[in-house]
Length: 226
Picture (tube, rainbow, N blue to C red):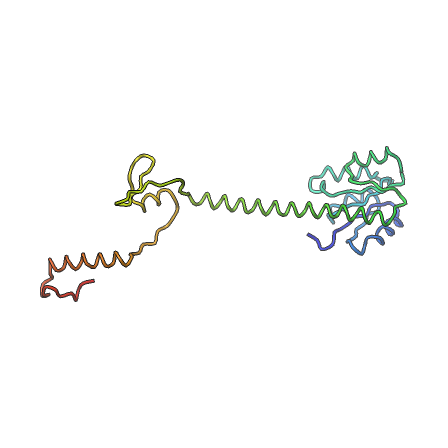
């Protein structure tokens, strides 16, 4: 998003462009075009946030310029305010039918045009913020879905044997806990041994070695015990 919104002023009279530029240049970046054909080229070049468009021009009318801009997908979102000396209901209807969002009569009241531009630019900024938030949410949603697709998940209550701790699957088959989780998720196991099991295994090894002593070791010799 630009620090200052950009306005494209389109008129076939240089003096009108100068007046509008003087009124708006402090708050906005200003581009201009003399006539309709130049306006169509200019709007593609500078991608303004708003267009102030003269209704009556010799090469292309404002309505023709507006219709051309609105017909192009990447330009259609740009709001257009018509400025015209043709102060009739028919002229206003024609401007709005072409796709304009507002219509002001010449000679333009400078304070009024500043307010209209400010309000419409505010709407543009709000729309851009909504689009930005939507794109962020879409990106986060896609990341979440990708993460879920990479990792299966366990659901519901798991029937576990209270003695051997095996788990029963939907087919009523009993599995070792590690085997079941491995089959139903992408979890990886890091094996270790708890202090209780270490002591238990130590006692088992001691018993075995005492029952089957190695040659040259006296009974009860624990030098080689774990």
